[in-house]
Length: 322
Image (tube, rainbow, N blue to C red):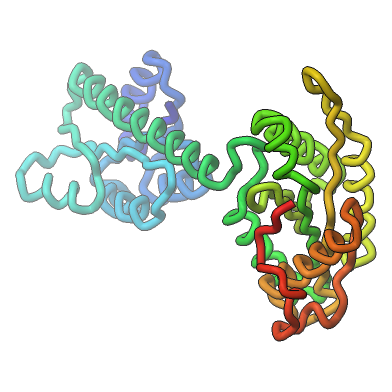
């Protein structure tokens, strides 16, 4: 645990730092409040702060206020070290953002107990943050394939379209749907359908750049968001993925299952003012044409596909049905 000691008295600094280092704390020592503020601004790993109340420059209370205004994600536990023990002074210090206080002359046993309490509280906070981060990741990912889910990819698409609009660089979209997926589930069972979805996920992840986005969009549909990619480049990505899927052979107990998919491609290069929803709608229209024209193929959207009034040939909007 990293501890910052701020005290203008050299004897107090020496005694505190020696005791804390003997208890395996990682200690940084400064001589006044201004130096404490600089140290805190430069080092996010400081978790416990021992502050003398009265120091040259910024006081301990001033440093407390600085810490709380920062609103760090990892909470620093602040202990004021003071000769003031009147209730009014204690309330003033705690109100400024201190978590605890010890009174000079410092009792070594009392200080050790206060620091143990601080470590327990910080450990609980770290555990809660880990749990929160795990829930956040779970909420953004598909449990079966490990890809990001629809909500996450839609946020990424919105961000990339906005970034592309500012920079003048295109954004490509590839929407694909596994062919005859309902028949696969009906004929071979849902466990085999899950194997197909995982195989599709693996093929897609292997065929994109590190900064591209791959998502399970819903059911048997997948979505690629390709920054700085016009329709020709997006089409090449889709063709590579189609060929990779066509080469897949899934070994089942009594048969070998082939996998194909149909692809629709769109890009902001085809409609500079296109929004994310229009890109998806245009790619969906192209995907539906790929289905009508025999499946296992890539179709690029036309300019007309970006017209919101253009019907989807009587077909429902997403999701497709194999």
